[in-house]
Length: 161
Image 1 (cartoon, rainbow, N blue to C red):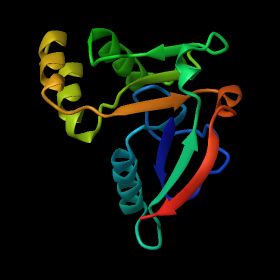
Image 2 (tube, rainbow, N blue to C red; image 1 turned 90 degrees about the vertical axis):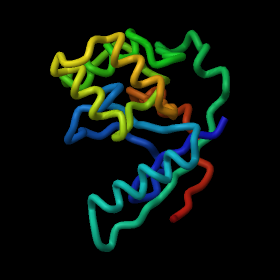
Image 3 (cartoon, rainbow, N blue to C red; image 1 turned 135 degrees about the vertical axis):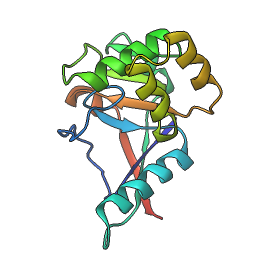
Image 4 (cartoon, rainbow, N blue to C red; image 1 turned 135 degrees about the horizontal axis):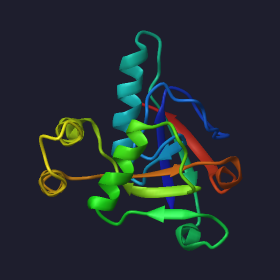
């Protein structure tokens, strides 16, 4: 299976860096199986940095069975449900780490951010929030949360948009 990472530079040796904001699945190295989603992220990062920045996609390969591996602690959210929502809200509110080395699930991208803000403010219930989220096309994200599991990512190539 190929995974894509959108950024502003080639990343042939992924690392877990300190983030300036709290992310859906916590501190980690984020990828997706959707090339277009990675390209969108790369362009957003490029625009944030400004003039001179490049939009770069790094491509990796992993074995499909990695998500069923007993060698790693893996959490897979097969749908945007209450457990997924609770996990995202917990990670976005706190910089505490979770016990998982790999997390796979839907991405709560910027178009869904308003819905999450309404939920966090108590305006929407969990059920209302999940219902609203299901009306959007959700892409996936796969995050890696320690150096050991990052060795499973085999760098293939990169390209500039």
